[in-house]
Amino acid sequence: MSGRHLARRAAAPRLRALAAVLAVALVAGLGLVTGSTEGTSAAFTASVRNTGDRLQTATYFRCPDAWAPQRDGAVFQWPLDEKAIAQLVRDTFSDTAGAPLSGHTGDTGGTWLRHNSSGSTEVVFTGAGRVRKSGSTSFVLYRSEPASSSPNYTVSADVFVRSTVAADAVGLVGRLNTGSATSTTGTYYTARYEQADKRWALWSVVDGGQTLLGTSPATLADGSTTRFSLDLVGSTIRVLVGGAQVIAVTDTSITETGRAGLAVGTPGGSAYATSDTTGLQLDAFVVQPTQRATDVSGHGATGAYVGSQGTLARPPLPSCPRDPGAAYDPDGSTSYVTYPTKQSDPQTFSMETWFRTTRPQGVVIGFGDSATGTSTQADRLLYVSAEGRLIYGQRPRNVQTIRTTTSVTDGAWHHVAVTYTPKGGMTMYLDGRRVAYDATVQSAMNYDGYWRVGAGTIPSGWPVTPDSPYFVGGLRYAAVYSVVLTEEQVRQHWEAGR
Image (cartoon, rainbow, N blue to C red):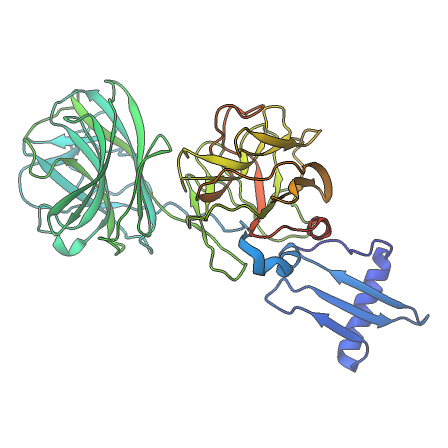
């Protein structure tokens, strides 16, 4: 991300002249060129003598280069410029009422194949453009082609309750092993709503053996529609309802990519029948590959995009002029980036990011005891308050905060940094200037947890809390460090982005 000349006295013509002289110097062996040549974002310092025999030095930065001196102390450094990954499968289930799902092709990809061949149960289309169980046996499973290129993806659908049928169940399937296509069970993960037990349930099925991994009680009312998801990222397997995590486990029993799909009924359960006017129905099926936030610190601290990835495109007002990269634009209701590696009670740290917003809501960077969903314990929170100001706080016992004096919801790009150490307290910088500090805070809350960017849990009792913990706007170059950035380093990071 290219920034302006840090020696502000040099005018644009001088810069062009310097570049020309530098080019000659490189060829003729004149002058001196020092600095990094790593990748395409190299910073360099050029020292040349002009015709007046005056020594001029110009340093050019892009934002990643300003990070370079802090990489040893970085927890992560995320440019947040990944392109959005297209949905692999999308199906709104538009077809002839009563037609079977087998052989149907969805709106985007997604040719459906029946996985298990036993029994008379079929999945058919309703007259309202959904799918439901047909027949009176207990269970049927379908897979969707093509496969994801990675075992990390999210399978989502709407469940509509036409009316209550006691033994009914509908589910989403992931990492389905297609090698067991004649089996009634096979190997896969499934997240389903089970009407008999009034619960969401997460199961692993390995060669027909079923293991209940987790449950969450829920009663779905007749006539209601609920969005739910099966999220698979490495060994973290989750169930989300309405975008919120309700079940999360670590499980390594199924690691291959497999296929996504859906299921109706319960393996080995009671036989039952539904119709267009009874039972549970599915709609709006989506398979979305999981995007990762690349870490450039050299520590392999890859982040995971959670929820809708948002629009990752070059913003009209980039944080750094001439920056060809994209920016992360979360949707303000489900989206954020999480670092899923647990951190041991950080008590000395720094955080920074470029951001822009017009909405007074959302955690910019925060810490909590859950990598996703709602945290039971949360502090070390930087958020946009309901008044549009930035507030940073910790909770050693009572909540202690510092804040900006002006609103930041002007739609312009800003650089914010917060540092904390027990000896120096809390300090906030906005656009290269120290704007707030409190040297009396000698501790943060004691617990191990996870860093997130773009959302978090704001506990009750915190000041001027916004209506939503989800940030709306643009985010670029987010980083957390296990060391304290100096005021000069923060200023340089801001200058590098101007």
